[in-house]
Length: 383
Image 1 (cartoon, rainbow, N blue to C red):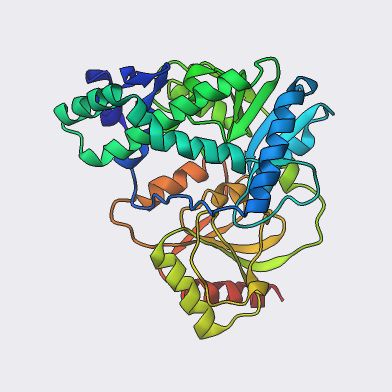
Image 2 (image 1 turned 135 degrees about the vertical axis):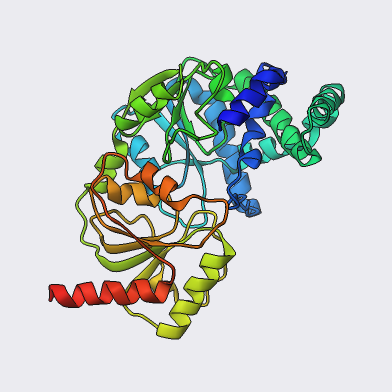
């Protein structure tokens, strides 16, 4: 991370912009990828759902003055809590559907139509602004960057154009709250929409989305106060707010209980291991919560798949480097870590990020079967 920041400053990479949107922000993740970088699959929506999204969006644009607050959120249960907690009646939700449906009880507009416009923008922007594109990739080539970054510059230019479009059709009078839906990541540097970014995962000293950045112009909403110190020590100079929406979600009353839950990662090693484990042992007390970007076709009965679990609903969690770990360490619960032995990942260093300020114990093992046997012994001892 330190080497990356020095490299960025030396070559003034944040100066590569379109409509004041820093194109470089899209290039950081592939450069610091840990080998677990996974792309989100976009399922083509049905004609009916696209038409519904189109008409809902058009109606909103005509009546947007009625709303004080707009939320653009991924369909993840804990994230939706920030919308559910909002007391204003003049609010509206644009929902980016995930593969697991968790929001069925409220009014919303699907983000499908706006996502289509964003997709088109990504396909045409680097052609419309071909001179800017050629200058950008030529500069990256000159300083030794691989040509694989070209596609990320194309995406960045598309998002810059799309953000400019949004700034023209959306009123700045209402506040926009976003994470992972519609609004591009570079909005934080522009604040073209009067926006608030919502934290949706663990932030650590080497997080490419928050550390070593140039001036931030919008506000970031953190879900736990401990991140404020991490951000400031990392040189983050933008505005910060605290909203413990995750705590509220975790501590809600529930009647569900799952003895063991495996939280998957979008890696073939873990997916195959989980599939084989169920086929071999056929456990009845083990359940699976899939990562939002895990599209593996498991040969496992759908009864064993769960969503939106909280730390109080799970007896024994099993995971690799899922940010779900943080949910349990916030309540000082023991976690079982399935070590996949990625050569370029310092497992203990990553776990120290999740356990900061917690007394949770991390039990690291190399085999799902051994983890299961250990848990079964613990359950037997408690009886």
